[in-house]
Length: 432
Image 1: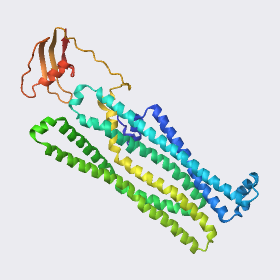
Image 2 (image 1 turned 30 degrees about the vertical axis):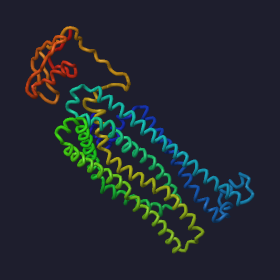
Image 3 (image 1 turned 135 degrees about the horizontal axis):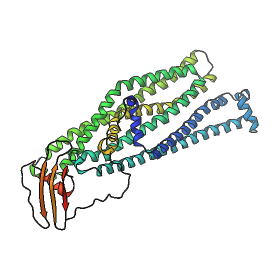
């Protein structure tokens, strides 16, 4: 159904919602839930670094800190070195568990995306196949094949997958930033403001171009499929007329632009990474110099800097993944619009068919003696001009019939009506 005007800002959410079944929505939420668990363990791994480095640099911290001293006694440790080694194994275990959960979340995400790819492609193909024959007279079959084989891939891999990545990494970033704010609010907020501003400026500058280039990719991909299909499907005519070069040149032009746009999009998503790494880790060096210049003892500086460095090691890939996913979403918006249009709007929306491998049987026209056409009238849905008007015809079984007329007089249409591919607008056909 069409998207209401007051929902335009979030229409991509409603379009995806229409394309997801209830079971798939539950699976999506499950993937998100596992991602939250992943973010928790990653945050725990980051949080455990600072106290571990503190007790390594200053073992007296164990007796000075209430919680560390409590666990030292409860667990029955007698030597500080043994407690430090035990703490190291705890930190390592948290990292191992976090990475294991991350691997599980990654598998669940990839499996969900590809299963959705499979189901969307099957349902879209079924909807196409069950459309009436006259639908294909006004739609290029190569374009429809491209939608099933490629645009569904772009929708799942270039839209649903990045959307899940944004949710996953946003949770990780929020949790880790919360820890950093707890340790040093001023330093964290200053760094966050710089990084957010830089990413926003780059994305804002590229936003419109990403949308336009995504629509251009869709159009050029359509032309590639159409050209290749026409050339290979009509190879006999191509050879007779010796027009191989014409089709090759046309394909080359569209393919060159398509490949250039794809390369541009993938490069744009990666560019900020190199700038942000310089800013982030250059900032850590700057903070280190500032702290030393301020006269703070090295023994207190190293744990904080190590903590921020490790947090940055976790944060930078997440920030880059979010930016890359946002550019991918914008670039592949055209694929979402196209698939949604064919799946949920227009004539295809009227085909309420549950997915099944069983073929719908069509009752054949009887033909024991003759086929009779009585007062047949026909016009195509995209035109008001009558192709056939009040046609009457009888065809005897085993008889030979020739249909003669000028181009556009309705010969092919009449044959399609006899075969049952088209249905008359008026009159009837009978078989006896």
